[in-house]
Length: 312
Image (tube, rainbow, N blue to C red; front, top):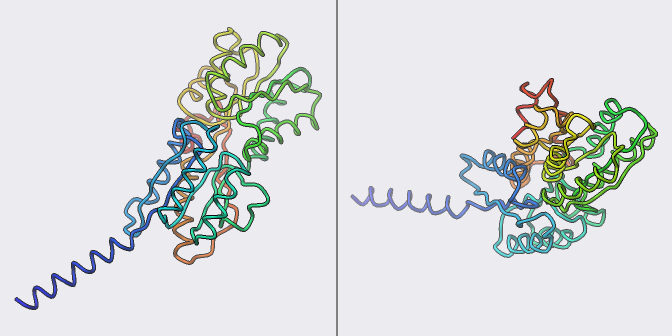
C-alpha cells in the first residue's frame, strides 16, 4: 500500500510539474474583426494543437486603427509573464517600446505581417511576412498587363505608415511610375474600414470617369472597393485588383468584378509564427526573415490547390 501511495504521489507531482511548465504564447494581431486575422488564428491554433508545453491566446483590438489598444494588449501580455509573443504591429513606431520591454523582460517576440521601425531591430527574434514589396510589384505588373500603359489608376489603401502598406502600396506605385505612363490617383486611406472604402471608391469613380484601373490594398478596403464598383454598374469596365482572399473577394473574382486578388499566406503566418516562438524557446536557431508568400488568384487558378491553400 505504501508503495502504491508513493507511486500516486510521484504521478501527482509529475502532473503538477507538467502543468507548471506549460506557458502561454500570446498571439496579438491588428484586429480580430476580419477573416484575414481569424485565418491567422486558425494557423496559430493548428501549431499549438497537441503541444503539452504551451498554450496559445489570441487577441487584438476591434479595429486596425486602434493602435493604443494594441499597445495595451502587448503590455498586458508582458505583465502576466507570457513565454512568447507573436505580434502583427499596427504601427511600426508605436509598438516598438512595448516590444523592447518584452525583450528586456526575456520574452521572445516574433513579428508577423508588418515590419517594425528600424530602431526596433535587435528587440525581436524573427519577422514572418509576405514580401510586400514583391507583392505590390506583382500586382502592378498585372495592372499594366490588363489596363495598358496609359490612363488613370486609383489606389485604395488602408492605414498610412503601416509596414505592410509602405512596401505593398509603395512598390506598386513605384513599379507603375517606372514602367508605364499610368497616372496614379491617390492613395486614399480607408483605415481598414469597409464602409469607408466603399464611400471613397464611390466618390472616386464619380469624379474620375476615365479610370482604367483601381487597386484595393487589403481585405476590408478591397471588399468596399468591389461593392462600390458593383453599385456604380462598372463591373468589367475597369481593371480592378484586390489584396487578400476572403469569401467576398473570391466571389468578386469568380464574377469577373475583380481581375485578380493577391492572397497572402495568413494561415502560415499564424502557424509558423507560433512554431518559430516554440523553436526559440527550445534554444533552436531561427531565420531572421521568413517569407510566407503570396498567390495572385484569378478565374483561371481559383480552384487549384495552390489558390485554395491560401484562400479563407
